[in-house]
Length: 301
Image (cartoon, rainbow, N blue to C red; front, side):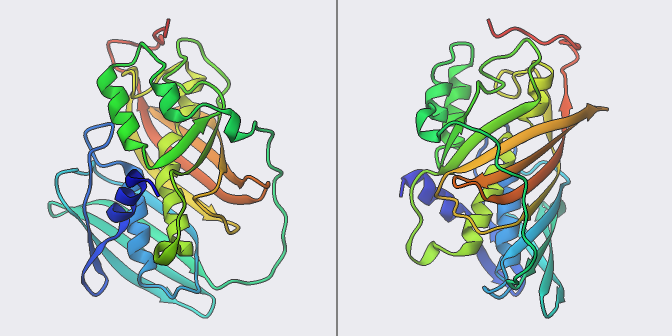
């Protein structure tokens, strides 16, 4: 296991300070606020610790309410909404400086046999043939070296590989609003930490990294790494269909059906390498063009 992955696992290991109340710490992100995927993952950890282990999470729905302060702890309060025979429901509110910054509803279910069908996995190259995210980042001369270092540090726990050039690598002309990324943790998980909830939590963490890329592609924007848009996640929803491991390759197939009114919508499916549909994801975010740039996208050349 890499040190970066161990650091991430430590970040997700919340301190319980009272029944149904947990405290998490933060770390700096690419932008000067807490990374949304971190808050969502920590909130899911808090909810999961109040649910029997034989009930894995099958869905979550969340809203990002305020920017998180990376210099302050986050307190997560869990409301035990329902404990049924098959389903368990939890609501989590994350608080900093006396104000809610995030809230999440999550549902957990006892395993059942049932009907089974899925959308087929789309074509994609073998992830082993693709450059790593860090290799791509360090190959771009137009990105501020300080930003490269921040990106590399923020994503060091994850082996994340774009199938095509990411928005910040090639921009200036609109492209198809579709992006594929292969990802897995940067190291194997084992021992006492190797629990089903952890794999779901890690996928939740990664799911917020690239989902709005397809919005940027549609408009030829490079994104936060090059400063031609500003924005943030607004809401996030995930459905966990089939078992998977976050330390094995997962294909994140993403697209954007719409952008309007300063908001962009991303939707995606996550597949295991052998073609099983593991997760569906939808997110809407604020995506605004700086006023001094107007509607014309800058060139990466």
